[in-house]
Length: 401
Ligand SMILES: Nc1ncnc2c1ncn2[C@@H]1O[C@H](COP(=O)(O)OP(=O)(O)OP(=O)(O)O)[C@@H](O)[C@H]1O
Ligand SMILES: [Mg+2]
Image 1: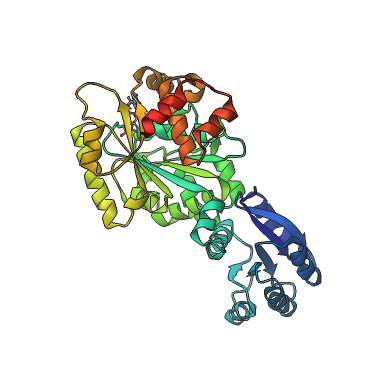
Image 2: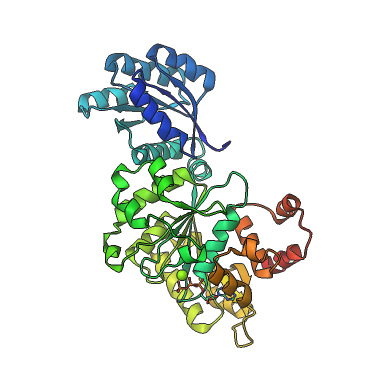
């Protein structure tokens, strides 16, 4: 929780204060440091706890609350203030903003509005983008250069491996809306799908979000694709973005398994992502597609966050060499995943993730290395953590060379 934003709140009304508290308690990106039921004590609380953000509800006494906004923002400028009210009176909002509030949110506070406001403030805090990236969940979008290239296998296993680390919460979202099978790969029968969340995006809160996602024994929360094909058009892009915004607040990592159609929803996912892994194999049609996809993403200013992952390395002698692939793509290869049909097929057919099914297999260790690299964990740290002294460090060094 060290990366979380420290928050304090003041609201003399027990009911709305309690509602806000519940919302804040389920946010990964925020830490409720203190709550206050009297306006007159709030400034002391802020001075003592030095929070990043203070939330002031205006409704019990607007005049007193706005005077408080003014004095806190003058005395404690590092504490950015959000005000809330059930009134949308423009004059009231203007007074609060003039007094020093950064954001106004309508009360009762919806989690999506709060997350969006915190995110905006977060970006303005000190280190700008860097601060924001550190403090909210990372979105990792995984797309592929051709059908059957291995994106879903990588998504599912990467998710369970990221979730292995203590205090790391991970959600996996299946965006292959027609044919996605992440639920089968994890041997789960989730009750809710992406459609349910998107349709409820406006009134979505964190408690509902977490309740709607199915939790796998690995710790991964799964959000599967809709059940019926005719539900696909109902997955709205704007609502989907809201859901992802909220997920950023609830999870450390959100892994998105994209479809191969590069639909508007896939493109929105690429926009939302902090990291994009483009999975390819070493055959000519796939590599040509990588070039095309990278060119298209460049036109959308999205190519900089894209990393190339080569899957099924060593599949057969007819594969294009890595050296040739690098030359063709004019890009480094971020990661290589070895071919291991036996392990992958077992994982898919039995619904048991690789770290449980075949922890020592090279394909597992390679994916573990990829998860660590994305999480910023050095191979040496991981070896120390797990006490593992096998041959995978050598394997990773070779792969990263
Ligand atoms: N590293 C690997 N070694 C051997 N076989 C693999 C590997 N990765 C994936 N496969 C095989 O490739 C096939 C496709 O895998 P997967 O479903 O993960 O790909 P995908 O890109 O998500 O496919 P789709 O385009 O259908 O969504 C499966 O049969 C799987 O067993
Ligand atoms: Mg797939």
